[in-house]
Image 1 (tube, rainbow, N blue to C red):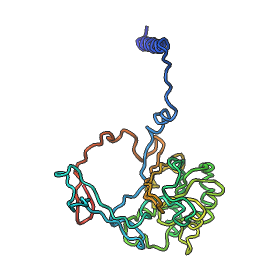
Image 2 (cartoon, rainbow, N blue to C red):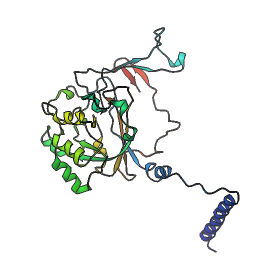
Image 3 (cartoon, rainbow, N blue to C red):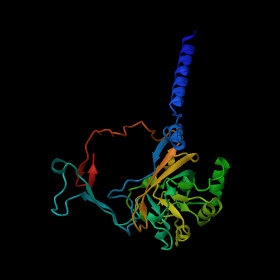
Image 4 (cartoon, helix red, strand yellow):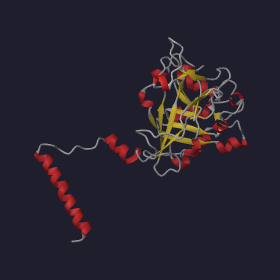
Length: 309
C-alpha cells in the first residue's frame, strides 16, 4: 500500500476511534463557536491597517482649542516624579485642552444636546463594513473639492451598492500634510457636500462617514457638519492612511474612550483588510503576547515634551 494512503487510513481510524470513544463516554464532539471559526478562517489572516494619528505636542489642532502637553506623572501628595528605578513604573501626565482633537469620533451632542454624547453611543458601533471613496485626484486639481453624489454613484458602478450600516471614509490625502504649521487654519480644504452626506445617510442608510480634515466641509456655515450633528448622526474626523486601504471589501474596527458626557472622542480606527491585501500586518507577524523588546527604551525628552526612543 502506498505510504500516503496508509497514513491517511491510519489517521482516519484513529480519529474515528476517538470520536467513538467520546460517544461511548457520553461526550459529543464540541463544534467550534461560529465567531471563533470566523476569526480563525478570516480575521486571523486579515491585514490590519491603522487609520489613526498619534496624540502629541505639535500635532495639528484648531488654534481655538490649543495644543496638548505631556509631562512625567508625579505623586500628588509629594510632587515626586515616579521612576522605574525607585517605584518600578513610570506614567505620563496629559493636559488635553479639548475632546475635539486628532483622529476622533464626533457624537451628535457636539452640536445638539438632545442627542447622545460619546459615552451614550451603542456598542454596536464596534465593527462595520468599510467603503473608501477617493477624491484624491480631484483634490490635486482643486484643493477645496467636496465629495458629491456623482462620486458616490461612480464608486457604486465599480463596487456595487454601499452596504446599509457601513462606514464610508473619504480619501483626499489631506492627512499627508499632518503636523505642518497652519494646516488646521487653512480655509480651503477637501470635504463632503451636504448633498453627499444626505444621500449616504438617507438613501444608503450608512452608520457614519469619515474624512481626513478636521471639519466635514469648508462652507461658511459648515452646512454638511451642521446637518449631520443636529440630526443625530456621528462622523469620523482626522483619519489617515486611507491610501493603504482597499476601496471595497474591508471592515473597520472603531474604538474610543468612554468620557461621560463627552462631546468628542479620541478614536482609534483600524481597517481590517483581505488577507491578500498589499498593506498592513497579519496576526503573528510581530510578537504580541508577550510583546517584543524594542531596540531602544523609552526616555523622557524635555525638548520635545514627550517620551521617545
